[in-house]
Length: 94
Image 1 (cartoon, rainbow, N blue to C red):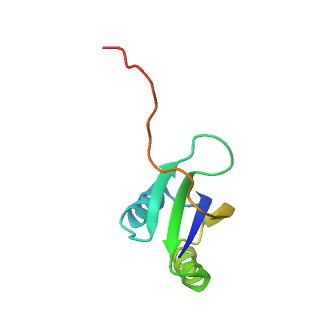
Image 2 (cartoon, rainbow, N blue to C red):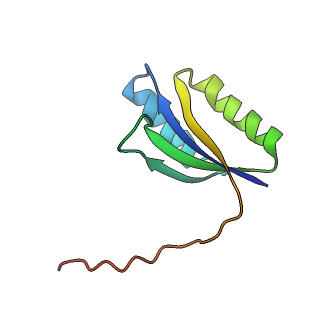
């Protein structure tokens, strides 16, 4: 399998289109992670896991066809996962 991390924006689309796109990504079994981006040129980030590059390309092409304003700001192929999980030693005030 391949893992690809994408930073994307949705240009020229109404707010309901962004909601529709985010709902599609949330419900997509190939999307492993989805986050809003608060700085920079992108609006959101997500990670796609696909069987191979051809499968990934077809999957992303279907999103670009369905959402004409979707722009990929950055795309990175991820290698071996070196750490998984989250353990942050932060104290929360009561």
